[in-house]
Structure formats: structure tokens, C-alpha cells
Image 1 (spheres, rainbow, N blue to C red):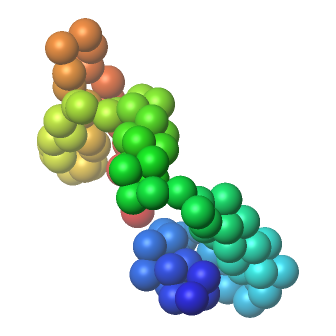
Image 2 (image 1 turned 180 degrees about the vertical axis):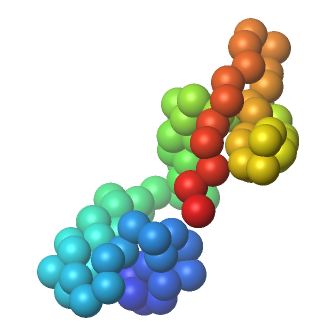
Amino acid sequence: MASEALDKFFPTRYLTAGAKQERIEHEGRIVEKWSSLRGKSALDCVRIFLTCTRKWQFFGARLFEVQVRKRIIYVKMNRSMQKYLMRAD
């Protein structure tokens, strides 16, 4: 099940080809996190999820894809600031 989650949700660019040990470590972390949720109610799991997402620096912001001089960048905007992010291709 952890392997399926890794395939479905983990960005493939972060998994180097042929790095089995790296994949095993990521799967272990997924199992560890899921195990820590055992016995918690659905409401507790939602609270944990929301707490984690609120800590993300782009939470609540809008991302815009903009082309500038033949390069694509992302502009993050929220009430307090704007930030420019380079797109990794």
C-alpha cells in the first residue's frame, strides 16, 4: 500500500532511477506516518492535516503561471506579499 501511495502521490523527479534504498526509506516514512494515525478519529486526522498545510508557506495563496522572456515562472500572491518561483523543467 505504501508503494502505491509513493507511485501515485510522490513527484517522480525526486526519485532517482535505480535508487532502491531511497525508495525503501520513503516507503518506511509513509508507513511510519500512517501508523501514527492509527486509533485516531477522522476528525483528529483532518485537524492534523490542516495543521500541516497551514504551516506550508504557500497555504492560502494563488499561484499564477507567467511567461517572461521565453521562461515560465510562477507568481505566488496573497494578502501580505508576492513571491516569484522558478519552474523546474
